[in-house]
Image 1 (cartoon, helix red, strand yellow):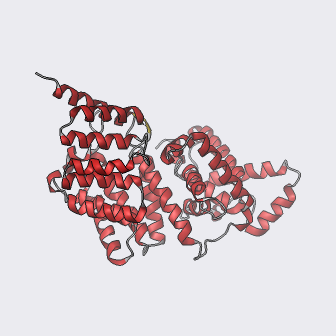
Image 2: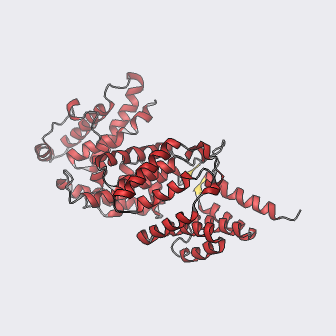
Length: 410
């Protein structure tokens, strides 16, 4: 394992320790970055320490101490922080046991009520998920400058609310958990279908999202939505081995070799969602997981129970009002009632999803089902021009080219 691979999962854990103890997000983030730089310079030649996490915490804490010593208010700040937390300035091994995972602490800290909900999500994606500001902006369909300001405001709110950080109360947990799950969902989606670049998947992100969701599930085993989200991730990630060809090209669900799907993950996911639906109030993540389970349990594409999927998407749309859910419901309606039914449903989404490549891609697919090659080609090309994912661009332009070639008179 390379040094960079070793450092990646440690970053949120170390940052979580420092923010939990000291409350100054910006200063802690800077200190962690300096510790990472020191590790990347020293470890290749000197060797990886026995406890990499403790080493990073110690170095980052020393950086914080050095910074505070240069400020006029150092003594008052240190006294306030260390009296409140009851810790020394240098993290010792007993304070940073490898069994602890302060990534979860950081998850809940970033979802503090002093921070607005959109900024909670953005900051957690940045601090815990390791996504760039550009990637987060793409996920939220906003300009990068807007997302930069959002993250900055979140850090400022955290700084202002430093004294309120502490253990999570039972009253705070539901609202914090809702945002945490949304963040984990977005991290997974970014890893499963990267918003830009020449790779369809970012396996590190999907693996981290699953790892963190497992940790939350272990903390809250009776929560139906936590179980639902974990099931959704497992059932979706199970298809990843069949989702790309030898050259990294995208293979859509209906063309995948289902013998390549990970049956172990499918079994675990089905068991999770079955148990959650039987015991807990139904929520959006459980419904999405149920849809994924219907797909995954069909050994052949012809065996897919589209009527059940259409019903599930109808429930999910009424519950969430999400236009992307409505887009998926249109596909299911086309599979059950024919492409004209799906195309009619898409008309209601033109204002909500104007300019989004997926609306054009779905419309193209339904026009292709309806036998209108010219309309399908136009929308495939429009979708290809709007996505920044190179595998998706290649797939969409190839679909357009093949349709155009097939439509030419012989």
